[in-house]
Length: 121
Image 1 (cartoon, rainbow, N blue to C red):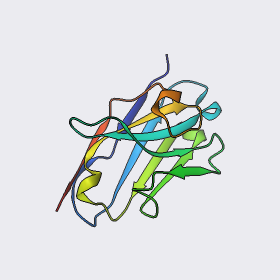
Image 2 (tube, helix red, strand yellow):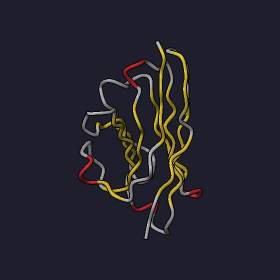
Image 3 (spheres, rainbow, N blue to C red):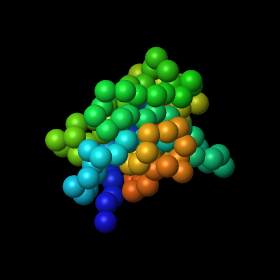
């Protein structure tokens, strides 16, 4: 079975930065897009960013454009989300999944356990 482990979350002040990592198991990592999604208490899982299999193209949610950067290193089975100029509304649990390149959580699977990001005002 494939699975993923997210890390790098924490508590930061507004305007600060964090880099999240997603380490995936399995031998097919390079065959799938990677998506980052986030979920706040009482809210649905929300699209954040996704990256193509080769890491050359990416799509971002309007709320994070210009602030977040997604990347991947296929040799390490790892994807990243570099977050800068964080805002309180970015507070959520962040999840990564592998699947088909889209902005819908339904095309992704092999989710990790999530990592908490909390941004204070």
